Image (cartoon, rainbow, N blue to C red; front, side, top):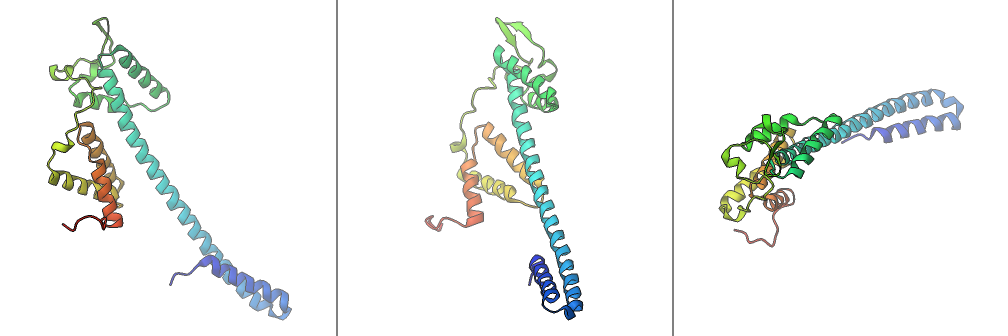
Length: 224
């Protein structure tokens, strides 16, 4: 049975006060009760301090996850802007990188990684090249240069076999619920974002699986 140290402290300190005021001859009992009450009060403060530290750590971890996710999304946005053949988008990306640098939030390495993954040359990404009446973004392979980074990816979700969607959604949901390490949840979010970027949106399927895992299956669903 769990002991409520705060309640115990209040009880013993109350006893001490009562013995002091009701009968002066009970001074010794009052001293003992006060000592016990102070001991429980110390334990209560330690519990509260531990709980506060745990809550602050969880909040810090949550902020760190959000910060990492934000860096990933913003750096991808900047990379697509630098690769764009639209002069205004290219300049907006350049201005954003400068603003991020001034805010002590340099993302050049992440931007370069996105550019390289998409087939662009990061070394020339920041160099404006005159052509076609305006700016040209980073030099690229032929395949990358023919692809508009701002064009939405075609939705291929329906073309993926249902068993594959179900298995992937199930594993990603379990990873997002995993409490053993933040890295697992970070991988799950990254995979989900990347799949969606490629036109494979598992958002609804993952939400349903998380609901099933936490609340149980919908009783209206057929049992097969």
